Image (cartoon, rainbow, N blue to C red; front, side, top):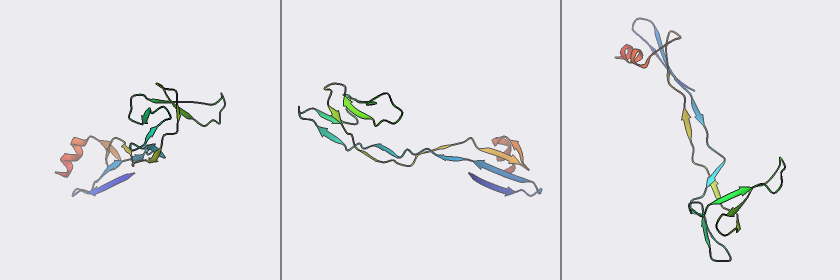
Length: 110
């Protein structure tokens, strides 16, 4: 959470608050991954021959496997460390702890 606090000339306190949420997954598709199977069919993350996963059995603890929807080949696509991704909450503007609009806050800071 990031908070910036301003002390206004009239003695009031204006706080601007925004929460940053890190939603980075552990891994993401490696766009450089290419695999050519025994039949010469090329598989990539971005090919539209796309890759699906299914559980080996109907159990809670399963490892996904991937296969090509065109040729049926089982493949093991590579992943990489994911790029950092954030989402941000709406910005809150508080005048002495009471919520105000952005326009009101801008006017106070002008």
